[in-house]
Amino acid sequence: MKGTNKLTCAALAAAFLLLAGTPGLPGQTLTGYDIMKRADERYTGDTAQYRLVMTLISGRGAPRVREVSYYFKDYGDTEKILMVFNSPRDVAGTGYLSFSYDDESRDDDIWLYLPAMKRVRRITGSGKNDRFMGTDFTYEDMGSRSLDKDEFSFRGEEALEGDLCWVVEAKPKDGRDPYGRRLIWVHKDSYMFRAVDYYDRQDRLLKTLRVPEIRQISGIWTAQKMEMTNVQDKHSTVIEMSEIRFNVPLDDNLFAVTSLERGDAR
Image (tube, rainbow, N blue to C red; front, side, top):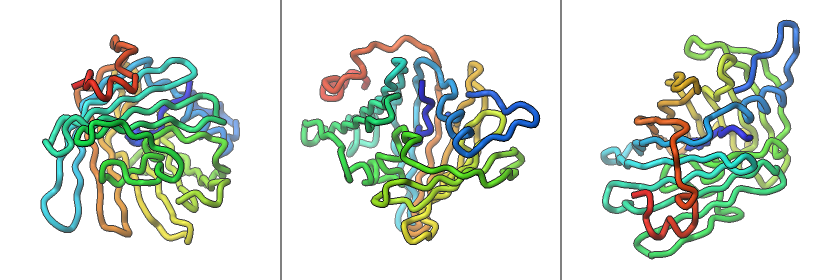
């Protein structure tokens, strides 16, 4: 089973978005790939249900707040995520559905339901690099990125807000990737991402992801807050999770494209 590095999210994970494994044995040397694989495989529950509050912040105007219902189910070889926007009125009823596969040769399948148009739109190709619902997360950021898309290098250890982390550099194999590289801080106790710095193709810092609040819920390490900031656009998105429940019954029909149109999760 793949862990969700997203909102997962992400993250979304996202995050959104947008992560368990066991720490290395004394004297064991972990490579950047080893660390990322353990983060990718960590246990995140068979199902999950959250309430998300997304706050979009720019230098102009008041922050925009959106409330979202989030559902996750692990089918063993496939992870499915459904997100439904509940408010404000201009985005209420919008639905996001993604399927992430253990088969790393398969890209995520992503659909977006737009109630104003009364249709489901499939997100493919370069469209996955677009911003998700005006946030600072792209559709790609929200999904589960296959490890075989990057080359990983271990860059040492560093304390981040009092937590000891491994630092891993990820460079995409595909020259068309919108990110030139990422620096990832992986929490040594939980294998969760505590921070990610995203650099553009000119190696300029583009975005920063920070996960300042993590704790165990039902024995599962969980992010409760994350912030993605586009330092070039001076815009940020804060995501706060509440009413978090793991391993609750969720109907398979909830994770169907037709459920987006029917609004089953509203």
